Image (tube, rainbow over all chains, first blue to last red; front, side, top):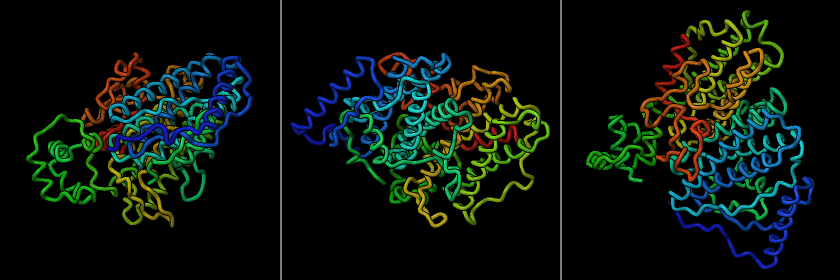
Length: 234
Length: 289
């Protein structure tokens, strides 16, 4: 297994460094001030972080997704919207705990494989409406659906069957989270047509997304963007 | 990893492994008889190799057998929901949103059956001649949901147990499109997990007895009234641990991740796989087919 990969694809150009630094500072300020969820979108068009290659890169890909989920749930549970019920909070707290276990386990897996974990990512959720129950659940549903589709698409890319099985053990739990969030928002929508094909030759199959499709979505919430370059595509 | 040691370990549980591997996996077929001799000569190492973990005591010979096994399980599930929706005993209680949800799930199972039949073509096994007899499963609404939870959770474990038995580069043409069979299996697997979560959520509702202790995920090996074997260990236990397993890749996750996590959260964070023999035995313990 290749174990030499860099978290940084190339040095930050001076100008984009300042743009990123400025955006990060703006995001922190927003978060610290408790803030306005409809704030400005932080953006840096140049992907500057890479995940690595082969299985280690794929583990990093999963690691970033689990970091995204934990950062999101932490943000929500730190300052929950007033209309989030006690039962909602209990369910989201359990989900949050599962995601922490996934995140920490993947970190260990990366370390065991002598790979460099990409743990310098910084998220910004200012584009989401997190001041209402509906907004929180809509965002949570989107993240869980995204992760399931990501793992469905990435599984075949692993060279080591051990990782494939471990990913399988995680993805069905993410699907359980996703189904619950669908139901909490709209009862009975646990496997609606937004995620499971309702007709056609592939009816009954859940979405599967490529690494690059997923990274495009993840980048919307990253202060410094990630590039999918280097990861296997088939 | 040391392939020869792995094969040596596999041969202890499956003496014909080289024969099966050599015509099943092109990557391994290159080893030929030289590989077998070296494998036999290699000193045994600790168990837990990649292939051992994945294959275990599964005894399905090839991808066709794996797909026919999936087809049987999907037919069982489709028949279960179809009979439930037609059962007079459930007519007064399986109504409204609950009926709509079960119709949705039945539709997915039907779609899975159709897809697998298309993929298998002439190799598709026939339906069981006498169909499926679910005994008293439809007696009451709560009983029906208990059985449903058992079938969905077992289905999730069953697909996971076969993931490593499908060559990841096996991408035949099905209905005019190139499909990666492993990806399709995962795309079915996550739908079954969604079904399981929803059935569990339904059991929390008033009509099913307001069982608020039932979570959409599996906590420990709590069976919630379903057969205990659904959440128990498979064979071999090291490869297919029970759902209360807290150890992944030789690491104890409650204490080995730098902080302490509860056994409930750790076990719920990972769904476990199950070998086909155990899955079939579970099915046969509650269904006649």
